[in-house]
Amino acid sequence: MASLCFYFQIHQPFRLKTEYSFFDIGINSLYEDSSLNRDIFNKVTKNCYIPATRLMLDLAEKFKGKFKVSFSITGTALEQFQQFNPEVIELFKTLYQSGCAEFIAETYYHSLAFLFSSQEFKQQVEKHKKTVAELFGETPVTFRNTELVYSNAIALEAKNMGFKNILAEGSDNILKQLPPAAADGFPFKLYCPKALPDINLLLRCYKLSDDIAFRFSEKKWRKYPLTARKYAKWLSDAGKRGDIINLFMDYETLGEHHSAETGIFDFFKELVSEVINKTDLEFIMPKEAFQKHKQAGEIDVVDNSSWADEERDLSAWAGNSMQKSSLNMIYKIEKSIKKLGDKDITHLWRKLQTSDHFYYMSTKGLNDGNVHRYFNYFATPYDAYIVYCNIVNDLYQTIKKESGSISYG
Image (cartoon, helix red, strand yellow):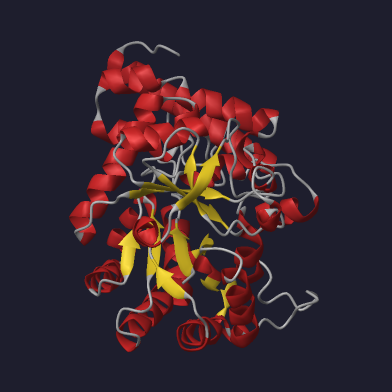
């Protein structure tokens, strides 16, 4: 029997002020827009987090263990849940206790730390792993790197940290390695990273995932409207071609990116019913994949891939000189930050690593540019860059003041 693996990413950054000038450096160390963070988080909680999680609970109860789902919730989102909407944490606890949910580990600060510092990467993953265990009672065995950034090196690090499973994008570059049956965007098998048979690699079926995540309410899409029966048929057909269908997307797909008025909640509810009652598919969580299916081979990914933009690479965060400069600015002070040993300053430094800050600086055009602009609350990418640089320069001054000096690299 083929399996259907649903995974949702939950993330909210701590957004910076849109106005932080050169003249604030050394004077104002309050970087974040607290009101904006609260307002956005409350809005998304109302539109998505509460109704979507209540729907998951209803489905778990209705189908008595046949419906299963998985989540990774970043540390920055967990902190805002605890600050603004702690009732959502309780809903997720109840969902986990039902036995129908798995919580997945990632970098606590939704950062690109692996690309710059192995030590910092490990510390953030361990912090997230510990927080998930404390909040929900589960020590994660599955790892999902920020924005599905993946390579052989990341897989090795995940294995060395004790993870049994890792998620990645089924990008076209990866699919070229697969047999012709998987070459059209449907990697319906369980794999392992190159030379690492002890860890399972689950590849995202991006075409089917994006049919919901990006195209569900797009009236110009030639396959609109997407009904539960139609989509379940696609899934059933895909299941006949392989073992596992991995549907990975943002949780905000439900109610935020596609509002309740589009019918997204009814669609998801009906889809689960269609899958369970009218197909040969079964829902599983990532940690169950190896119990159901054998690895079909190994996947060799030397260069970093991701699930963002058409390139599926790192260009969403490091594609222009502003982004590269900003990334270098924040990571080159790691030594000074850790030598200082101040928990509050370290936490602040790490929040400035959150990948969203660099995403806002993207200058891409066409469809990718539209997606970047949808998430960007700055007027322009250049505004995002200037504010970020000013804030990091203020952090430099704070370090000098506290330690008497600052070292780079």
